[in-house]
Every structure is written in structure tokens, then in C-alpha cells.
Length: 116
Image 1 (cartoon, rainbow, N blue to C red):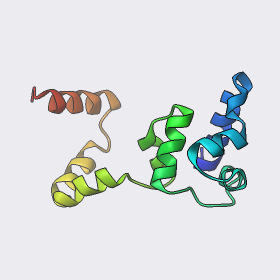
Image 2: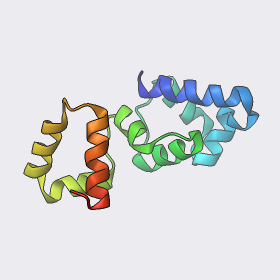
Image 3: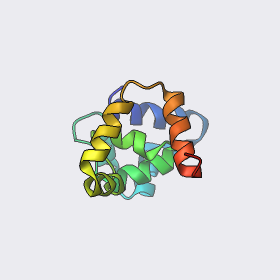
């Protein structure tokens, strides 16, 4: 699903249960004009900046990295990490490309917890 369609579908689903998720109210909370958010949701405008996507992710209770990826972006902190060791991270990402999700999660947990 494209970024625009996903955002609109998610916001509308939340609005069905809670009127605070109207286009106007969400736009106000993330710091954009309602017309701008509407144009993003319809795909008339490109996805917004990383900062706005972060606010939108928080507002819609979504994973920021997932929304950034859907928007064709990578967070600045990940870009900095990759730039520090580009060859190593390129090799790692390519090696993990076909690994099952559970194996990737296990590897990430092992590294994070220092058990590797």
C-alpha cells in the first residue's frame, strides 16, 4: 500500500472510533495545514519531511521507520550509522535480505543484549 493511501486509511480507521482523528485535528496536532495533509493523503503531494512523518507516526500509533520506508525515506540517525561504515552495513543488509524475519529479530536481540 502506498504511503498516502496507508495514512488516510489508518487515520480514517481511528476516526471511526474517535472523532479526534478528523483531518483538521490530526493536521493541527502534527503542525500542518489541513489542506496540506489532505493533499498528502490523496497523493497529490509527496510525503512530508522526516519530522512531520515522525509526528504523524506518533499520532497514528505507527512505527516511524515503517512510515519513513513507505515514504521512500530513511531516518537521519540510520543514515549516519550507515555512513560511518558503509561497506560493512551494505554487506550486512544484503546478507540479511533473504533471511526470515524471525532470524533477523533474533540476531538484532542478540547484538542488542550483547549475547553474540
